[in-house]
Image (cartoon, rainbow, N blue to C red; front, side, top):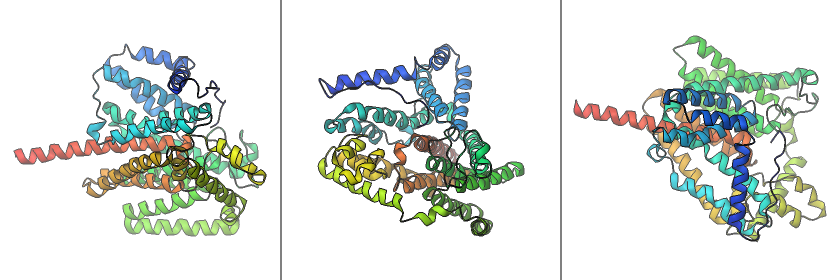
Length: 458
């Protein structure tokens, strides 16, 4: 992650892991409150707000979160910290908690939260694991923000529009780097194939993966803005500009996943017009490659050294599973495993801190126990999304469910060759989308139940 690295106390396994973890949790709370004194002051002020003012405050923070997600990981984390610390305040003011009422898989959620702690049994040095566990807790709690603040979550479409707008700006920056990279404040080597911009994300893959979410959300907004021409035109402009931004990052998997998923949504939403649009984009892409073959040259690198790195990493991931199959080698400890298990010829792999595959990472670091919980939780979320999409009768809600489900699939397809769940820049937007999904599903079920009651009483 970009920015200054955080320093954490060097905890050892002795004398008591619970004491160490409690101390570390205190450091985390200190970091999110005292070190961010402005955020703490704002939260203290909100404790004395009346309900109406607090709702305005939460709306502002939510809006800032959705703008920040494609633009600034630091502002994103600060916004989420504000929202998480605001939840007790919201509860104390009588705002209704409805996590389980929304169908959110609460038991699996709790198990997924605690399984990394169990894996510390095999961790050679828990000071390595704890920063990753802190990030895990921080990201996984995000859906609760959306689900537990109904007064704010009712404006999810407005927030999604802010997200698409910010993704469009980030995409424009990526496109400009192709032509003017040497003159921008965060330039990249224009004869290369990567966009490097610490102003946004740590490296081009994460930027492209987040832009893929914005790309799908822009297609959705074009679908639901059919009655308002200016918004529809703006949405289509965002669609094409964000796709150009993904192309400009010169990444393979995010571009492939975005194009396939976007084509699927375009045909589903716009039928024949969508098919024609997809065909035109493909033709434009082929023509652009003909005039400048640097645009897609990473696809010609398949089979190169980077692919060989992944094969070697996956091999060591399997070795890690064999060494500790039940509870894993310890959450976030894959680099430590490589330090002690690689020979001289593979010592260069130590620069990687994960297995470059979400499923393999779960199995290697948390064992079969963690893998089972991992598969059940994410499988349950996927099933909930699929059922909501197939059974929804209201057109706008059906389109939203399909878009979120498609984004979820894109994330996990990318996770077959990258540890997307370890990249906060990519995982944060996904968890926010999951929160939006359960809020929308709960509202749809509530509306459907009210309609059925009205029919029966009539």
